[in-house]
Length: 161
Image 1 (spheres, one colour):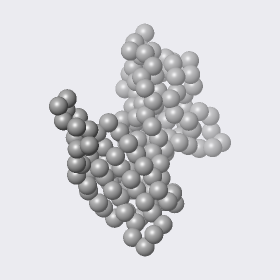
Image 2 (cartoon, one colour):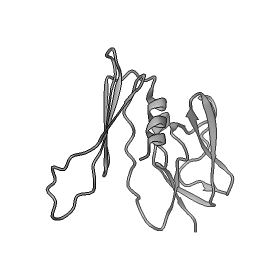
Image 3 (cartoon, rainbow, N blue to C red):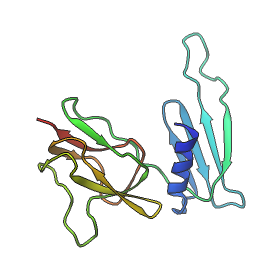
Image 4 (cartoon, rainbow, N blue to C red):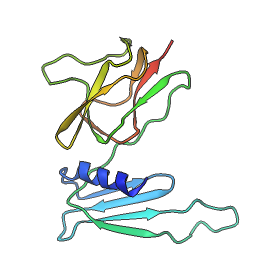
């Protein structure tokens, strides 16, 4: 995760009002604290462990000031290698419908073509239509409606056959 992705995550969650968020991945730990006079983000990048080196190695710390934060959704694991995974191209809020009174864009079992709109991702008050880059049949929808999504998070599984 590079600094741009961290900044985008901070911008996305800025208005949630959470007091503390911790995100841990393989090589990075992020803690975002808010609600005090100075809101801070602490990023710990942990080097990959080596066989002869003890686990308690020192980690560099990066601190940045942020307005607010919220928890990020964890990316689910790939279900089956024969399916194509459609991933989120941006950080935002995932919506399955164009508006609350309209029908869903796609449902499980529906056949889709290249260029069909699958969902909308709202990022900073902009609604981005996410179009399919493949043709096939929707096998599984991996994200709930109105849920936050991360960059490159799996959204749909498509059977291309």
